[in-house]
Amino acid sequence: MSMTVQPQPDRPDPSVIAAQNDAFRKLACLGVPPVQPIQGRMHVTRSLMEAGDGFMAEAVKATGAFDTFEPENDPEGWHDFGAVEIRGETVFWKIDLYEADSDFRYGAETPDNPATTMRVLTIMLARDW
Image 1 (cartoon, rainbow, N blue to C red):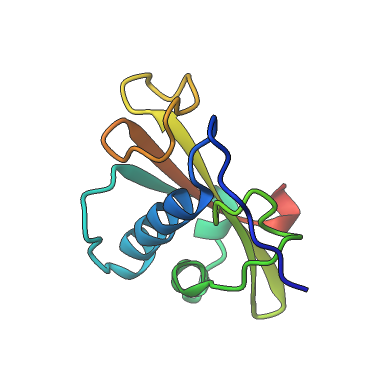
Image 2: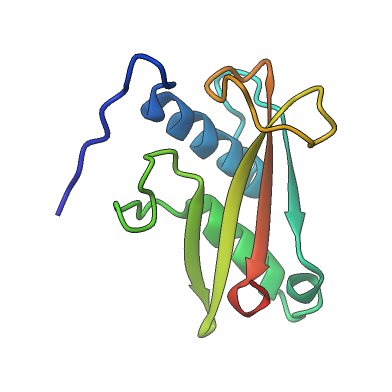
């Protein structure tokens, strides 16, 4: 089943945010440069870092390559969450959007504006959720 998310006049266009989130995730995880600059940081949890034997590198690469967005895992159409399987272990990733000058205290007022939005990509083992 496919669902198209329609932009609303008082809300940012989800397809713009999705494209920016995808571009940032590919930059952070795969080193693919975006068309326009996108501010952000990537964090991985301690348990993911301690998994050893290249597990974290596989999880980061799979996060960057993720493209299976469905209404169940992407209800807003922002491409801001996903789950990947690495060696039988579920890994979650999530992108949060903040005001760039707020020290991560406030959500982005205009999340579709890359000049004022700071993205934070967190990658973690599902069992740590």
